[in-house]
Length: 180
Image (tube, rainbow, N blue to C red; front, side):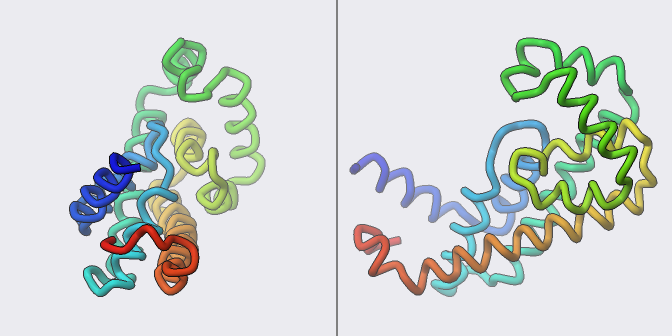
């Protein structure tokens, strides 16, 4: 338990707008880092007065958009053969990808267009991968950025509300977080 407190203290002490944006950039690429370990903690810190909730949402959403643009660009320029080859590799399977999942995402994207980008940003497990079929389908960049920003923004607002609310309930839920 002491190690947990030490890590949590370090994490909270180093959580700032830059690290929020950086961690959300990573979250929105194909690397598995859930936004649930970034935004709620940052909003908790905002509730303490160290950050602003608006800043947490904006920097988190900007980071998410930047990470999504990495996936989009890779899929757009490297194209289908490399994406499918990666999905079938050991590393791709480590990231829970498969040829079938890429095909399913691509077909869904083709059928549902812009809506799939927006809704995909709201679904855990899909949110960081939805940029790949957008790039494969060569979706208009401005539309991609708009729907990604709105979807990621809504998701980050939800997570920020949760983190901010947890601060109000901290004594009841987490009595051991005295110094966080």
